[in-house]
Length: 160
Image (cartoon, rainbow, N blue to C red; front, side, top):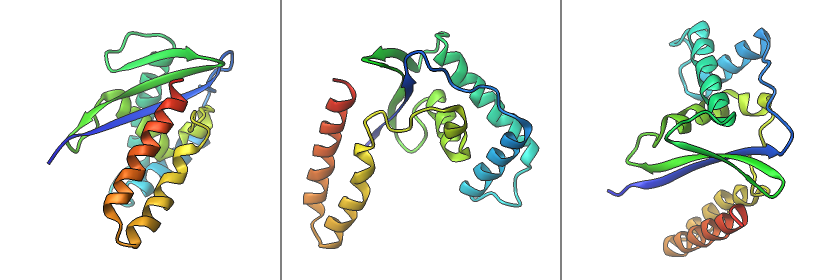
């Protein structure tokens, strides 16, 4: 079994800032969404998740605002400001910032904060349906080749 490289890139146009002012209703909705997506309905207290999500948002905010974190980088590319984190994974999240961003996605807070989820223009969102169709035809090697090409092309678009 090998390691996978996992990476998150979130961003927004330079000069625009995340909407860090999240109201109580949004926190509660985010916690309920997080619980549902994690399959923990009835097992996890909403207030505990709200507290956890607030900590995760503060961690992302610290990194976004230039605070020193070892596992993420913030830089400007063209007209965008981007936060990048990731690394090798053997089943666990590769970094703490990666986990925080995953929680933003799982709770829907990524949208509330106003981050662009696909700085690559949504190019990679087309990958999974395409791979599924190719694999359904029994073409596993071809699907792996397509995945490699998509990732290389997607990375070249993102880091041009």
